[in-house]
Length: 349
Image (cartoon, one colour):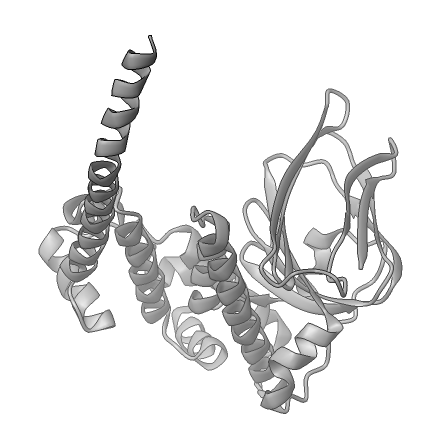
């Protein structure tokens, strides 16, 4: 399959790749970064990774004036799409069927950097992945010539599981075959989580007025954006134009959890990510997430996950120690040969 992405205003090709072919190897990992920067139009950064049967594309946009971007595929494809940093519909996602041919998107001038994550899957691979689930899922039908950031009516807000998995993909620092296997596993997990949420939404009959649904989405976004210093329920209700009773009632009906339950999910998943990165100690993580003391944080963490944060820290430290020891063993094994080579070099002199 061919994917070609072109900035039409200046006829600049951001991406022109052929993948998912019959000769493609399942162990392939191909990565490339293309950046277009112009004093008149601004900057578009296109980072793409071909990991086995998935084409993962991270796009960062910082534009001074609107542009038109043309997407061409010579075969139909399934696209998973995630609105990330800077979007008005921050942390939303969608999945759609893209027919073969040309698609045109209008990207507006931006006041801040926008970030999108796009993952393409061939129809055959999508079918293989979800065939056993016996899904009755209707793909989103999006309009061409539409600004992606205005497609909020076609999207759902990411669950905490989806958000955590997206962050795992975007922040992956592994290399080589470990990176390919990790990315393939995570994208498969992400696809199943995404389809599961969208199906549940389609099958759920919620008798909440449309205006109140929009207010709940707004409230959820405000919670996401203020996990360190969250506002009270009364203040949150005022900000979205409702009252405390409706906020608590409709939020629980729509998202299956309370406002503070959702806030706690966000904090715990953020904490886990920080523990796995091993850049901060437990005291610093507790402070960064707004906990008064490390003990309060540890208690909340244990209650949510069933084990203390120190358990992750210890595991990460053991892995690091094991890698260091392996390197030392490797060097010690090579030392006799290094010494021998040095002696031979001296003799030759």
